Image (cartoon, rainbow, N blue to C red; front, side, top):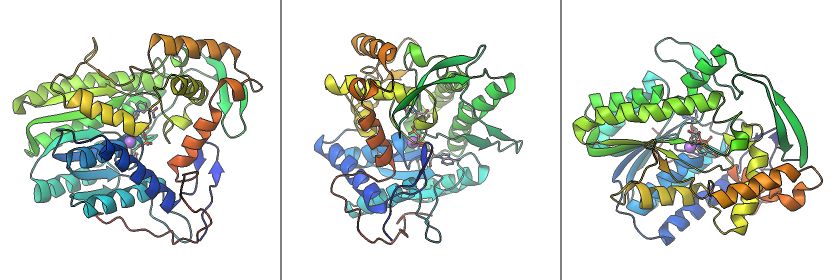
Length: 395
Ligand code: NAD
Ligand code: NA
């Protein structure tokens, strides 16, 4: 079939297999153009199919020749419906990895569950023996707790007071006011249950208990801070509480990993268009202004550039500089004072009328469609394609 984008709000219901493949190849080419990194050798990536997790997997495999196991939750094609983008990404990644002689296998299922954890442990045991890097890059709106069976739903709400500010519908370019009522205690607890550190710690405990972590192993999970203007809905809202918890969990895990001479970090990454971030109010408008400034300053990065810098200049350069809270910062360019001052200035002026000149809405929209394999250079979108694609290393 000929595959076209079909969007509903901030999701796209279709994905393009050739476009997703080209996306992955472009990321691989970027990493290969940068030379090798004395990095990890055997890597588990939890949340490996899109965004930062996929970029981490590509960096480890094609930057350091690492064997990788990816865990994700994606949909195969079904009855004329396309597969999800992460499915096509993983198929493309594993095809390229195996062609390059690299071990690459994956597990598709709920990473929060005991079953998927056990399946992953068994695969590591059988194939790799141990891993020396665990990347935790899940982003999910829901988590069924493995002990209680309770299904927790995260929310994106301010805490303590309602919030109102500008936001944009990036399909139409209309800038409007959004108002969000404050979270209650349940909203906070549920968001921490989904996006906090409990599941990361469960993964690390299970790996350590079964002696599947190599001596000196590293664990890393991803966080976000962002500017003052998104604080009420992000860092000081429900999701921020979850990130506080995730960051605190890094210390708990680091303590446990001392037994194997291992380390645990949170890396604070920059704001980027991913399936997760396009769902957060206010953030798309902020990102379109940020992109404009960062591109003008020649410091714009996507997921792959970010993860390359994380591996090469932070995790594997033998000095791992962290901030006062022990976090790795690859959001350093986003948070530069001059960049933030310019964004804050644009924020006061931005309206539906001024956005095309002030912001990079086209960059935002292109990145959004790129996530699903659309608007990628060199792809023939007229081509009649089979939407059914196998992931070579799927267990
Ligand atoms: P993403 O949506 O691109 O990736 C999420 C991944 O999690 C996918 O591989 C998906 O398959 C997997 N996943 C979701 N639910 C799952 C489940 N139940 N079982 C197994 N796999 C599941 O998101 P992303 O933006 O790359 O986010 C990854 C991390 O980076 C998150 O912690 C996020 O907060 C953080 N981060 C994001 C940004 C940003 O701007 N996008 C910035 C800084 C930090
Ligand atoms: Na990810």
